Amino acid sequence: GNSVTQMEGPVTLSEEAFLTINCTYTATGYPSLFWYVQYPGEGLQLLLKATKADDKGSNKGFEATYRKETTSFHLEKGSVQVSDSAVYFCALTSGGSNYKLTFGKGTLLTVNP
Amino acid sequence: NAGVTQTPKFQVLKTGQSMTLQCAQDMNHEYMSWYRQDPGMGLRLIHYSVGAGITDQGEVPNGYNVSRSTTEDFPLRLLSAAPSQTSVYFCASSRQASEYMGYTFGSGTRLTVV
Image (cartoon, rainbow over all chains, first blue to last red; front, side):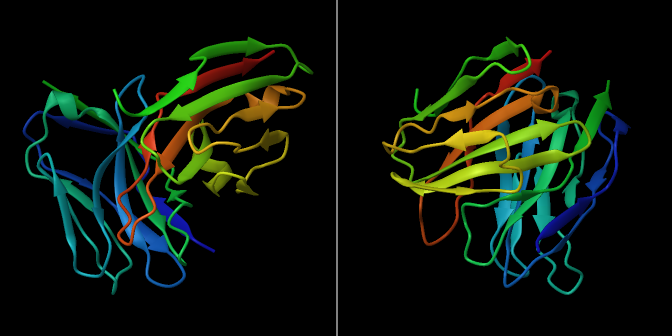
């Protein structure tokens, strides 16, 4: 079956630090990969996506590259802000089931001024 | 504003009570899903629907029922609430497309069963 493993949190950084949140996956077929973000007290929002190998998804300064050879989709940002404090979820769909997301457990990021 | 609307935002139930969590979307999305979010567990799929009249079970369906009589609405029913169902519930919808665009999530219902 499908599964997503992302780095345990919480992650605490100072403003302007570099961020990496690791994500690896196991899936049948050719999955589509996503990062969702959940700000405090809110629902999840799609942050970025990649639908085939070597694709790079990007949004709001965040990037992630779909690496088929290492089955990874690590989230990166060069300079984090306090407003980036949130929970980040890596997720995938696979096997033709575009309506069934499999999520990682989430990583809490706190950015201090 | 277009989006996914969940009601109520907060609810406290006694063990054994039943209730329905409401979910409505106005984007004419075909796909709708219910997830529960628990600390350290991420989000787990309860039930999903690929269109009106079609529903199926997800990863953790026990204790929950759904129906989809219209494209817009996808209510989640708790038949006999148990403390293990204390969680935050999210409804989500997505358009059927050749390239998957991702889900739009509601703001959640925080349910406590005592």
